[in-house]
Length: 212
Image 1 (cartoon, rainbow, N blue to C red):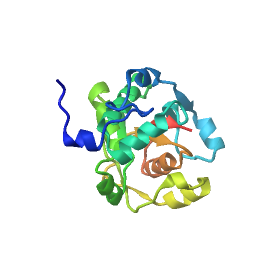
Image 2 (image 1 turned 135 degrees about the horizontal axis):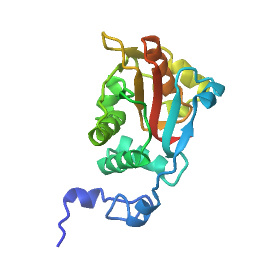
Image 3 (image 1 turned 135 degrees about the vertical axis):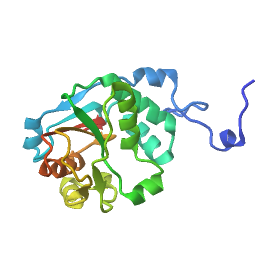
């Protein structure tokens, strides 16, 4: 007989559709498939993202319930969703230049303290363990930028300007893959790429779960 704790009674697991007893039903999991989105350098420049070389995403942001899954992972701290998203990112099997490294997009310390973890670091470590690319924290977010989801593109760009700092003494690797959970306007990834390009990086691309 399966035993339930008082926590299970007070805060029961509910799937995306509200079924009690699990965070994700087999039916829901079967619909959560890789549906890649790729944005090239040319497309990025047309959107005035002037430093990032490409964005590769597992799926569009409006695909299935991916928006809800990301929010439940980050804000409700449901770790099983982080495992599922990490596996989807690996399943996407994005190609990368030789001698690339993974760099998670940093959170400000206050946001990381409040949330308890940096989702980009979790994703990067999972990828690293499977495809043997090193994770190097190259950047620091030197001031809080607030919740970007409530801002339009111009407000995001203004909030992010000067928000990141390169933290190593030596020059960065030539090929850097920025890892984050999502890219909407791409402003955060592009600001990171700007800092990295200015200290010598040759190519900076972004890998995310959702884009759009």
